Image (cartoon, rainbow, N blue to C red; front, side, top):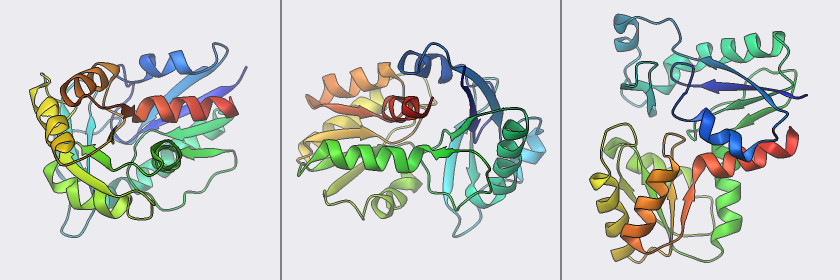
Length: 222
């Protein structure tokens, strides 16, 4: 049996994400979760708000609400979560956020959702114009920078996965299709299969779901 350690930038357990990912992982895999924000108070979370020049991230809390944080403040907490999972017996650790991160210390295979997604997307997209849906308006420029190394050209729109309803996402998908996108990618691990179906129906385009790509590639090491 392989033990897969899953690290979220939010709070564990990710009941909105991990159960859906299990269908793409071997049935023998044991999943153990840790969150960078586990155990933090409301005041602690406020202190992690993005500073000027920091990368903006959004994630889910245990109670189902969402929070916007800066990348810099959670890096030590992500490292601590990796250390705990490895010391507890994880064979592979996966960080389930598609944002960009610096290298982390690790003694066992460490997978990051971002590189898994961009590599998979590049192979799938061919020469298509890619429409990227990110969660927040302030992340649009980050998305252009994140995907600039790809051969494909991109267009970006935003729609959060952490609020009820699908209208915002459907509008984003339609706008990207109108701009000439031939393939959409939902660039956050918070987007679900329901989101993918809504975006596909609204746009008439194939839609790449981050958690699907990441889980399927992770399965190769588990």
